[in-house]
Length: 586
Image (tube, rainbow, N blue to C red):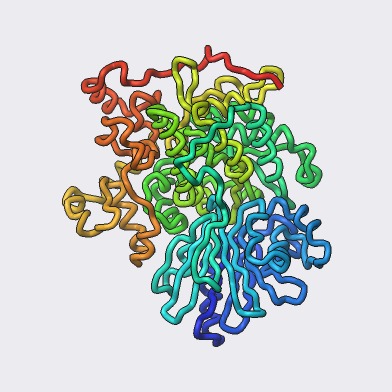
């Protein structure tokens, strides 16, 4: 994984222009501290900042085909590259790098090869034979990518905004699952799964072993590495399952032969945070070498400006969660680890956020999961990618594996519904798939631990602390004028206003503010899902604790006020997990 920058068809091929592009590329050096490269062909420039994970010795970029007529700069991991090489027997590869297959696939299949890639990627490919180019981004948008246009007719591509925002007349997020071709001068979607049509409700019966096997395959394929790695372990369901599967299958991999079968796990939180306690317990159960990092509220506040600069967003949910992840990533990188496996994406696929308790029927439940997955590239994927890459650390996300998503999203959403009378809490089908009495993956109470959003799990005092800090810097008078100062995505809270001021200082262009999503949300819901509970419209906070009547540690004053206006049976009771008794046999 790396940082890429490409300028295609610019009017200036001078040495001064080359120097400027090198300067802009260096803004992405945090993403690839191991090596840098720049190739110029006429008025086209392809630059690269490399984080070397597969074939560190010879995989420097840009990459080429045999006669160097095809040039590629890639940010990605292609997990099936060995199989793809076997399908290209007449080609000679210059490196053992996983991304080396891209130029050769293009030679064989033209622009239609992208769906053959199993992995995460953003790349620019220049065909010097006719001076055409294509740009593509992975299915869900795990890797970050932006596109911009210059007044001289040039097209700019960069892994982060900071690589192009000062040079382009207009720029925007490059849509995930899409390809841009210079021949057509338009985007087309190459990733077309059935669930993209939200109106089609899947009907496949739930098979816990099929789901389990699909996830195990997704984790195992991500153990492709030539450098040390670890797992993020918050003690929540998703990260714990990732760690459990990794620990179970690591011994038989090439990675274990090179780096040993002892798995390293990492957790972050305030002193006494729920995640620290749960993460330590899971690590003990799995036998990992566990690394626990504590931060203070002041540490987080001091880092906020850096977090906003690196994540390139003013979204409240993202910044709250990105800050502890940013701090942890620096610690992890200092230990010599270059990449980690993480649990992003599960909540979107399985309806794991606490507001899903109020989904009125399976149709709306499924449609909300579709909306959430489609938006991942603006939220959790952006956070995981940029807060780790700020320190040259890569995050891999098996829940967002293409094959796994297909299996999970083909399941009849009736099985994903939360049904208290049957003991089915959020993500019940995922929990049940790994509830193995004979050979347990996790302790039972961890397997059925209530969903805790990352920004909450690191310690409830974190969100409360940054709210207090923002209130000291944003006055009531400033909030009265918020709609005039920020007419687009007007901040509704002092915390949101505070983040917006910092963002606009780094990225003052109108195009930049348009790259950030907006709209009302409660407990990470989409705006549409707020309709599921009338009381939520007056409680628009992205924290999981805003799902009062659902979260065991909901904001007490809100629970009390709601209890006065909502019928008691409308408030979802707290759940006892110990008597669920759901299990399957291997």
